[in-house]
Length: 323
Ligand SMILES: Cc1cc2nc3c(=O)[nH]c(=O)nc-3n(C[C@H](O)[C@H](O)[C@H](O)COP(=O)(O)OP(=O)(O)OC[C@H]3O[C@@H](n4cnc5c(N)ncnc54)[C@H](O)[C@@H]3O)c2cc1C
Image 1: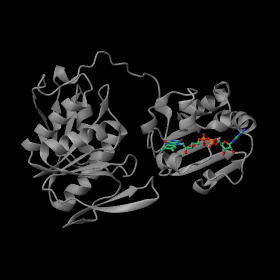
Image 2: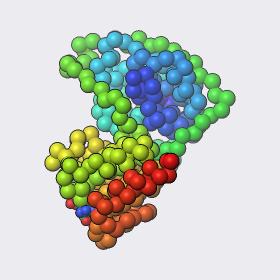
Image 3: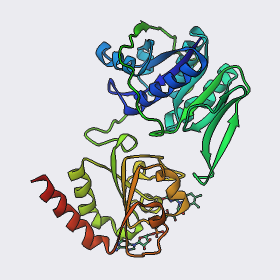
């Protein structure tokens, strides 16, 4: 019996979320008296694969077929389900990010498994199997009972601390899975990968702008602050809808859900739908001209004032600190 965890890598390097997922899987495995098997898809060097062992994986299954270079979630679901059947996995853990949200329902059909999506804590009880998840854009929580024999949990990002397991050893096993036309129903013509940019979902610090930034021309000091802090940039939905910033930066209910250590919200009112994507951040700092803006209720620190005047001062202050 094993807890199976699907880990994600980017160009052969594991994303931070993969170590979170393995840490979480290790916690679940301890509860049910099982071991953790991690699945890695794509070309990843052995030294990198072994890092999963530092968080409790006892076995790593690596699948590296050419047919899997297409970043196709149908193919990934097929590989994970084969690995799950082979390992007799009763609990499968994947991220609650876009790719996890696409894989979970496909896996659910293949394995006749119930899905607990967006869980953020270890299961509350094993019998009945009950998990905790936030719901209604983070305004409520739910206790969800999963009755099927095989269970799939998608873990909310940054909701579980990394937990190293000193002394743990792991084995690595290659698995070959046929990925052909019977599995892939669509064809990917072109994949364009971003380079040199901090991934928003992995970032420790995020500087985010809203409609209060007034125009796409005003973003200079915000991006400069982000670059000085080694931060990713983000934005509210109207900003990306207006085309001021790219859609991949949009956070919130209909955008990315993030939980960095520090989220700096500039000219963002703090609508419920925005907070749904950022309220799990450890510290929120708000900069807003309106002292009554709802963002200040979510923020630990705030500056009431004009972002156009405050951002350049922050940039200078960070430069001074770095001298
Ligand atoms: C179904 C649905 C889903 C949605 N999903 C999302 C989502 O995922 N993400 C999201 O962000 N929104 C989402 N929205 C939209 C959401 O309701 C808000 O409209 C949006 O978040 C507001 O964006 P904003 O804070 O940038 O703009 P505004 O609400 O216009 O706020 C701008 C803020 O800037 C301040 N300001 C103005 N000038 C300055 C200045 N010079 N310096 C500093 N501050 C200044 C203002 O006081 C104000 O608080 C969704 C809405 C719906 C209906």
